[in-house]
Each structure stands twice: as C-alpha cells, then as structure tokens.
Image (cartoon, rainbow, N blue to C red; front, side, top):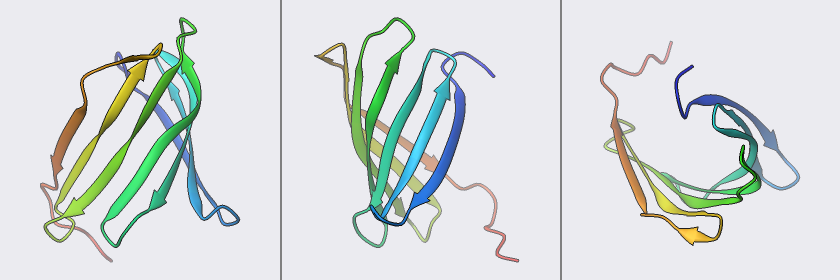
Length: 102
C-alpha cells in the first residue's frame, strides 16, 4: 500500500437503492460514500462522512462515466478540503485487456 492509497468495501443498500462505500485510506479515514446509477452508463457518487487524519473535513462529489462499450472510464468531480475548494478532478482510465465474461 503506497501513499494516498487504501482499501474499499462496497455493499448494496436495497432500501436506499444505492451502493454504500467505506474507504480506509493511508492518509485518513475511514471515509463513507454513496454511489447511485444516474443513467445506463453514468453513476453519481459523494462522500457522506469521515475526513482526513488531521481532522480536516473533506467534501467530494462527482460522476463515473463508462463509454466505448465499457473500455473507457471517466471520473470527474469537485473537491473541498477544510471548506476550501481544490481543483476539479478528471481522470480517464482505459481497459487494456479484453473483458472476460466467462
């Protein structure tokens, strides 16, 4: 585990129709988040609780957009640390190997 990495636990909340996420990071945490489906290829998410190890609150929300038949994932959103806005983020990931559906 390197700097600014961590472990994610995900579970389905059928009552709220959301995916609940618990993140235990190396730089703080635990952090709690919700994820929900906005459309066929888009999921929204936001941090609902937790903070950094120094006690500063963190607010993050954004979208995961799957495109190119599942070969591309674009993650974008906004971040505030201790009430101060940080630069928006936009990360793009590409699948390098074929999807194994067996």
